[in-house]
Image (cartoon, rainbow, N blue to C red):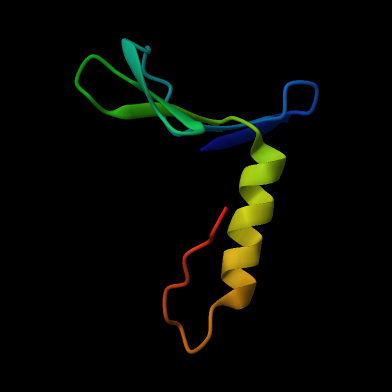
Length: 72
């Protein structure tokens, strides 16, 4: 796995495979690129600094390992 961050565009990228990308699907601030066989190849998190801030806040608010939802 390779992780990189583009500070200029605020995009966090997780490359989980070196297979060629065939198509992509966007769900909220996340774009997942898939191989021809439907295997995830690359995940891009747009507005990564905001995404990570919310994720960190949720993690810090978690009490007794119960799930906590963020209200954004």
